[in-house]
Image (cartoon, rainbow, N blue to C red; front, side, top):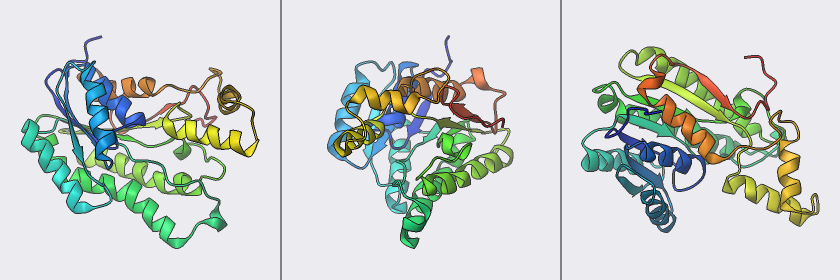
Length: 262
């Protein structure tokens, strides 16, 4: 299926690895010109090199810490300098630490809100004028935890809900010029999940990596965890005219893990 986004300009944050990388890869394979972003310049450079092997569009890397407003503004300005405009914004940031409620300090709540919510707020503020020029799109990558809370992830369960409320509000305030949606990944085989499994092996909770994958997928009807490219394909679709009547939606990509009816 031709998504019709060849030549479009996209900014994908938190994209030097994981789900952001997979989203940038899907967009670039469809011919979009993409700016990817991360804090580690060495890791970012390597990601650019890998993406260019399969990309039909141009791929540029711009380093920035999204918790720093000035760096975030420089990221947007750098994208405009490279491409002239922005047609698609994809927001992705790393998850907050795994904690239980009584273990979580006030400053950790503040940091989670600033990282997960305010980064999106600021990015939309800075990109809105470009997105609305050509009928742009915004896709927020959040987590299935906004549908169904996950044990020991109080920060993600709580704070990510703010992104969904923001997404729904923007889908009405910015329409019809800009469509805004969210994707809610479940367990996906990213570096973060691999690290969680390795920790479980070291603690002696499981014996090997495959046992970790099996444990994470045991409550998923499809009997496996997701692959990053499966989430990336959904992001690319939502960014395209093929999804032109999808607006204000929060779409699970979790293999049916969540039991929520809504």
